[in-house]
Length: 151
Image 1 (cartoon, rainbow, N blue to C red):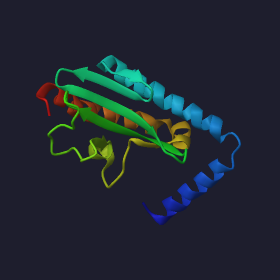
Image 2: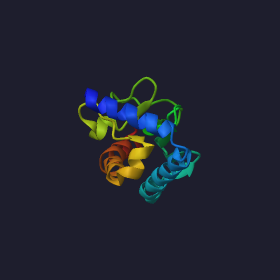
Image 3: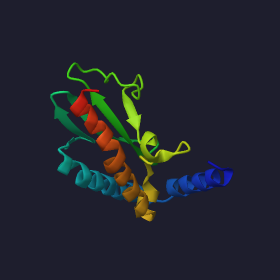
């Protein structure tokens, strides 16, 4: 990320922090993300509980988790898979913590398309659409293969 982008991001965070409407806008953006994920995941057999959509097969349980930043500026989509024994799959792409971000599927250059700033979701709806496309077209087929092959 260039310094210009960093300055823009810092300025946008500052403006949001001082905008009395930001908490309402943040919730509006969060609900837009949830609706988009719901529309993409439910037809594929995922069910929502809390902020996690899960799908269970005889080979394990996959999850698409929407994780809020503790600073309230953004969310991140995180993928998980657990075997029936409750362990991460024996797969070279899984970290020790058992989570994968969308950076692996469509970021390039260190970008994580699954990291969504709330203001961007409202101001640049194409960014959310791109994230959902990457999730559905690239990440979920890879995750689905774990249900079929067992990791």
